[in-house]
View (cartoon, rainbow, N blue to C red):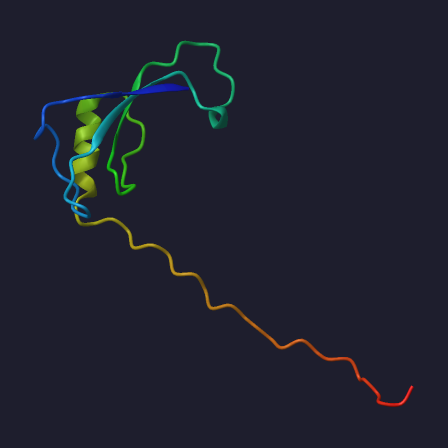
Length: 99
């Protein structure tokens, strides 16, 4: 997949609710390696991505991508917490002082 950034005037997109920066707009052509082989033309897709890592998925149009960015809002899922590690002490071999 080939993608490139498209620049827009400041204020085109809503600011990120996490870092308060405006997202960058990316356009992609082609398919990813995860999608498998496609023998048809894959239409261009759009994604909005913020510098803090928050992003929409790839959408078929800029309007849908902008809508998805607005739906992210304050309702992003919280990151999963790692379960507490089960640490058990290692058994020590029975060392005898006599050899």
